[in-house]
Amino acid sequence: MKVLIVYGSETGNTESLAEALGEQISAAGHTVKVLNAADASAEGLCTGYDAVLFGCSAWGTDEVELQGDFNALFEEFDSIDIKGKKAACFASGDSSFEHYCGAVDVIEDRLGSLGATLMEEGLRVEGDYSGNKDDVDAWGQKIIAAL
Ligand SMILES: Cc1cc2nc3c(=O)[nH]c(=O)nc-3n(C[C@H](O)[C@H](O)[C@H](O)COP(=O)(O)O)c2cc1C
Image (cartoon, rainbow, N blue to C red; front, top):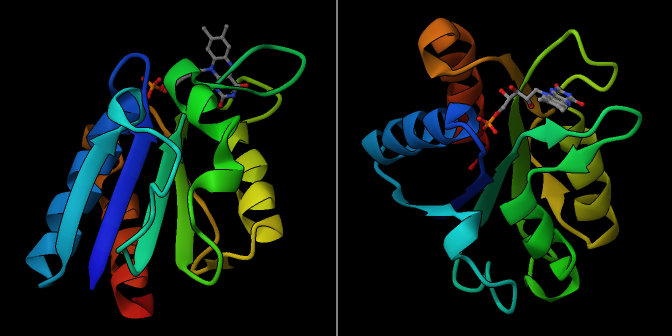
């Protein structure tokens, strides 16, 4: 399978999840591209891929604000060509905030309305990969099983 992992990360936490998931999924024999949202453009983003994972941290206080680079992409999500494809979301967050890893909910909602098939409930992680290896690896295994 061809898998795209696109992430937005301010301080590197979500990036560490994206990199770890990319290594895990490619070690399982799939072709994986890990792409920073800062380097991505929306038009046809998912064309040619069988499955896409979206990772994004949340900012803002009263309501969820998607990480800046990802938000720019999200504003043009209509054109990413995700309809009928497998997708899943992941995020790093801080559970002291009301909307813990709130980007997962926002992106999952939008993916649903765009006609993507969600493979798994979104992954929510406190901090980076190093403190959450077991949870991230277990989620990655579920994604591999669902590809
Ligand atoms: C002003 C501000 C608002 C934040 N809002 C949220 C939030 O709503 N939900 C959450 O889970 N984390 C929130 N965070 C924490 C970051 O999302 C968290 O540190 C995350 O790990 C950063 O990931 P990144 O390095 O990939 O950007 C906030 C942090 C700040 C400074």
